[in-house]
Image (cartoon, rainbow, N blue to C red; front, side):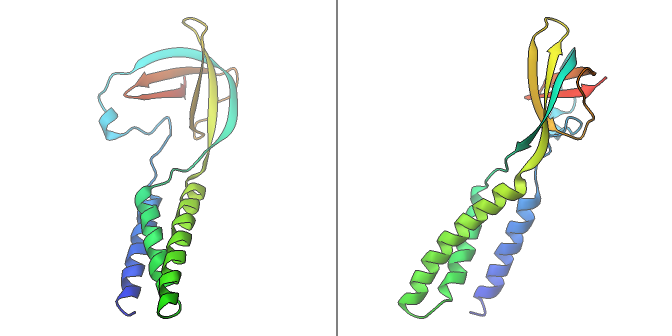
Length: 154
């Protein structure tokens, strides 16, 4: 029991720290691999801006960690065959709870921005973080490249 508790606390702390590192979906944040890469620039006008929610992603390693912690915690319940049943139930509950927490914590608000392109009148829609002020009628630049598309004010 004395060796199990520190190991459980260590795994829980590692999961908590790992779960906090979320990539940015901001139009003004670039990943290191996107530096010095060419982007195509188009111009257009915002047609609409809608609030949307981006669902959090599940990380299999965090789910596995939650399952392990639940199994360890559950095995401390009862004695003999009771600890085996507790371990199985604890693992199931720990895994499900871990997935649920990951999805809930990672869910964030974002904007779906619909833009009419000047070049050909075509309409596009981009979902990105809501950290830039964008409103219908606003002139914008659309930056495309390195696997991303961004809508930024002029």
